[in-house]
Length: 246
Ligand SMILES: C[S@@+](CC[C@H](N)C(=O)[O-])C[C@H]1O[C@@H](n2cnc3c(N)ncnc32)[C@H](O)[C@@H]1O
Image (cartoon, rainbow, N blue to C red; front, side, top):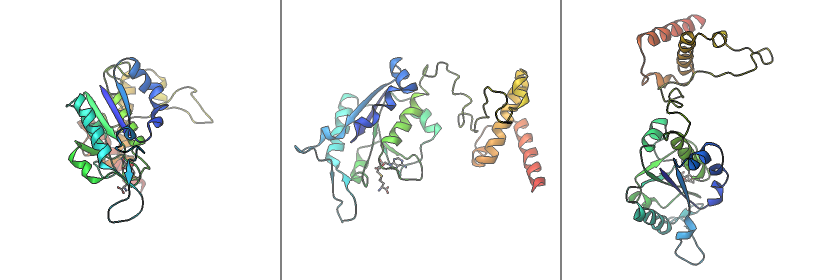
């Protein structure tokens, strides 16, 4: 897969793309990143990429011409590229969306800045994506988040096809808790079942903890999760216990 990042701040990506999983994924050949400097597509000799908003108001707006020139240049090389604008006004990015995007061969993630981008960009993109209901200074962190979430789903990147299978959201639930040594830290122990080596009991405990966490922190996810009869019975018991405790 190829992921291009179109930005006014190409240096931003130097460190994150050259460490940890994102670096390994490139070394394995699972992904290639391209960092594209929006200024290279400016039309004047001062490389101006922003201007004042029509109608007045604060801040600057990214100009349409350099953005469209950059998109066209990438599309000329690869007509199949999926062009995505990072924007707080788009649908919220999710694990499902990451899975969909991981099926693509080529993404172009566009990072806005200042007050945002000239709205006519909508005629030239395939979709918008938001990280959530808050405003970031620029799209770089949002695009990096998408790039990371997608890359770790590419075959082989995490060193085993099953590595992401039980993660939060992948199963429709939050993931169960993890512990490692020491067995006791400042008086806080770890659940006994994890120390006893009975894999059937461990699997059941993990499933129940995933259900318990999801019910407590993200009950909205339960409505869409795939649950069996045992899960439902456990959730029912949880609800009855917490009703009694109230
Ligand atoms: C300061 S924001 C502009 C916000 C814009 N004035 C608004 O109210 O919708 C500048 C850029 O940061 C990026 N950005 C900010 N918040 C974001 C979010 N929640 N998700 C994705 N991108 C975001 C977008 O690329 C946006 O164009």
